[in-house]
Length: 174
Image 1 (cartoon, one colour):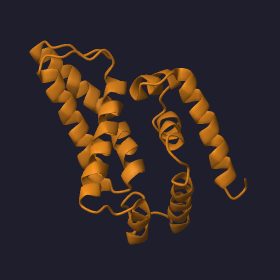
Image 2 (cartoon, rainbow, N blue to C red; image 1 turned 180 degrees about the vertical axis):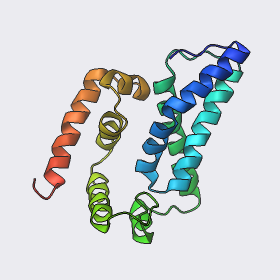
Image 3 (cartoon, one colour; image 1 turned 90 degrees about the vertical axis):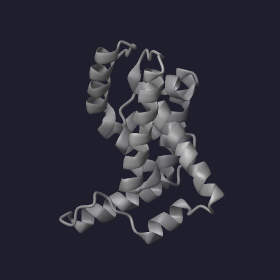
Image 4 (cartoon, rainbow, N blue to C red; image 1 turned 180 degrees about the horizontal axis):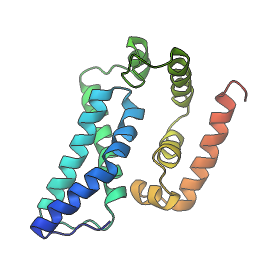
């Protein structure tokens, strides 16, 4: 989806992009911060920055990777702000409680399984974790991931393969 800078059309196209990608950008953020409200804030910040970029007269050739890149940058900015204020590590966030979906009606076995999966997944080091989330959770193609991360599609494929190998080693059934 290409967005260009004619006023009424731009707003309509942006709203369509929001409808198409807001949930995916939210999931992208949530898997990294494990906090629903913070993920929602980061998702909204990514869309606001994208809108400001468009409103300033810039064109976007493909909105999806642009939104993911903007969300990724918002996540990095958040981490930097947290470091300045003495960050809470990912482990301490988990110790404080992990809200899988914020629904009390969830089956506890499902909640515990999801928590275990997230814990194992978070043991996979960067940059492997990022490409695995983008590929299998956000369902992006290696070429889209490459454009977002400014690396080659081949490098993305190598990271996916190595990340899957590391994930398999960490899983209980190996």
